[in-house]
Structure formats: C-alpha cells, structure tokens
Length: 181
Image (tube, rainbow, N blue to C red; front, side, top):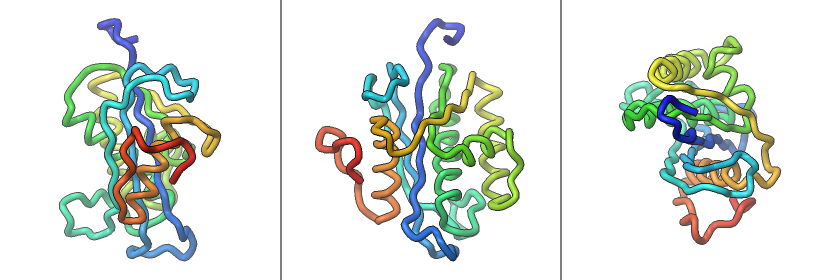
C-alpha cells in the first residue's frame, strides 16, 4: 500500500528474440509491457489494462530511443522492456506504488541492481539508472513470474514483445487469448 492507501500498479514486462543464437545488432528482438490496475497477482486476468506498449530493441547509437543495446537478444529485449516501463513511469509522474513482474530473473535482478551485469553493460547501466530514478519517487518492487504458465498478464506482455519482434501489431485485447503469440 502507498501512503494514499491505493493498491499498487502492476507492470508486466517481457522480451522476445526468435533466433537467440549468434546475435548481432541486426538480430530482431522486441519488448512489451502492460500496465494493470486492480491485479491480484494470481494470474487469472483480474484487473484492467491501463496501457500497453511495445517496440523493437534499438541498437543504433544515433537513434533517439537508443538505451545502450549492442545486439538484439532475448536479454536485451527483456532489459529494454523494463527500461521502457521505467521511462513511462517517469513520464506518467504519479506516486502510486508499482510492482514490476517479469519472467526474466536476469532482467529484474540487473535492473534493480541486485546482480552486476557482465554483458549488455550499456543497456544494463541505462536501465539501472532509470530504475533508480523511479525508485527515488515511488515504491518499486520486482517480482518474478514463471514463463508460459498461463499467467494472463505475463502472457499478454509476451504477445506484445513477440509481435513487436515480428514487426506486427498486437491483437486487440478483446480478440486475444492467453498463450496466443
């Protein structure tokens, strides 16, 4: 609970990279996140989706949206999802507590500076800086969820990331079913 007594916002993050071997700067990778209000964490889809965002991992240093990713990979996609969620939180400007849920322990532990990055250091440092800035303004808690176990909102974040990686639009929520990529 926050000081105002409101329930936290839940943000589900995920990344996707179809060919996650011998990755390069041109390897397609996508990230996605969905913001859910009123979630209870059980995974059956309680709550209301407030916002969804997705995109591709940017490896072009000259691009305005560059966060430090040198390659497109599953790990850079997962970190990008967390970083993009942090950017949205900073722009949103609220004070409500936030729980970030993802199926990548790597991304959650790197972003929250529990682990030190050995690879993807530029992106890791950018993500940690964004996390730290958000955490200075509101309560921010990472929580791991198991991947591909039918958790509705984690599956939705997976869908958003997969479709972004494929260069396709996500299906509208009302036409999408968990497990459908």
